[in-house]
Length: 63
Image 1 (cartoon, rainbow, N blue to C red):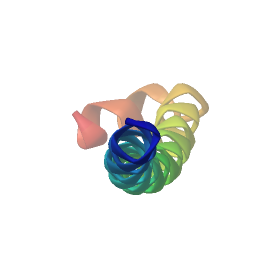
Image 2: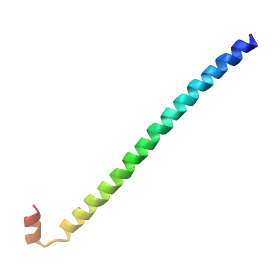
Image 3: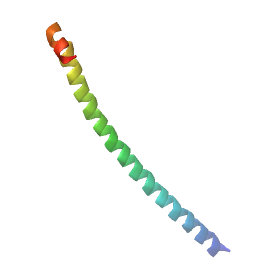
């Protein structure tokens, strides 16, 4: 009976380790995506600031 309990616990532990590995992989992918979003947001802010600081003629040409 004790052996069965140990085997069940080991099986559960193995499943949880696989689940943890999957979650870590998903987290790494999400962090990578967030890093890319930061880059694009920064670039967008630069363009928005450039537009805000432009003269009216420059804004017309940009639009």
